[in-house]
Amino acid sequence: MTGRVWACLLALSVWAGGGCAPSSAECSGDALVNEETALDALPKAQFDWKALWVWISPSSSREDVQQMASLAAECGFTAIIVNTGHRGEASYKSRYRPMAAGQTVDVLGEAVAAGHSRGLEVYAWISYLAGSGTETFQKEHPDHVQVLLPEEEAKAAAGTRTSPDRADVQGGSWLCPDRGLTEYERGITDEIVRNYALDGIAIDFLGYRNYRACYCAFSTAQRAAFAQAHPELSAEQVLMQFSRQSLVHFSQQVRETVLAAKPTMKVAIHVYPDFDPDPLYGNRLAVDYCGQTIAWFYVPHWPFERILENQKAYMAAQGRHVPWNRHVAFVGCRADDAAKSPERLRREIRLAGACGCRHMMFAFHETLHQDSALAAAVRDELTP
Ligand SMILES: [Zn+2]
Image (tube, rainbow, N blue to C red):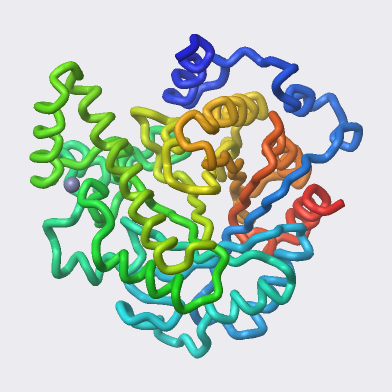
């Protein structure tokens, strides 16, 4: 590993700027971080794949779904990633979980038709460990739930937030990644892939509530066995490598399930929550499109220099472990008090294309629906 990569790793691990010395020969983003340079004097980014994360209410009408797809196409996206479930309910016809109260149309089915009629790829957004029907499964299998250290649970209960970017420890009840893909989640994945003419699925919420490890009885025993098999590793290395291996294995199981049902499918992810022991671990996942955050939602919005450093680190790490795992620059923007200016959003989208990156994803559709100026900014950047 080169000194430069270590510098990037360190920079990312503390989420601070600096670390990776800019190399203008490698990266086109350096001009973009200088706000003195007018954006219109610089070339737009060129993307091959542009995905929009869409959280659409299960009670949406057919017209709502059509409007969503029209907006995505008008703004220049090539793919939509549409939610499939929330709190144990499905937004589609499921064998495993009920449709949401008030739902009258098959929202996922409508989205597939609406997207394809406009030339968009359609991905099903599946939240695995948190949220997507796991509550139903967890009631019957409480031993599959993540367990944290008592002081971590106290932080989760208190909702402390040392960094504005995230809770110190995520709350809620999540399944344990060390268990691998449960039959329940496998079933949900299989039915979605088989029953809808999708182009791919997108993984969300693959990770640990404390951003590093689970301490349930199963994980503790498995980690001890891993330590015994690797006497050369320190306790901290055991914790990191065991957890990382679980996350990678989970992605491989999802991929196998998806491709067994439909071999032409793609697998995407937004790497979330963070994995603090190895912030660049996303390049090991068995995914085609690896969404990694370069510009997050929250205020204070990240300085452009930091966004560029993120992009450089992810691009430098691309292809080191899985040749077909491509970094996809994730840009988040809300329409509420945390909204970015259209000018900032345009610059962030150009940074998503820096260092030769041809893939980006944006969250969420709601932002574009609610704020026409931000929608115009996205359209300006993503269309010729
Ligand atoms: Zn566990």
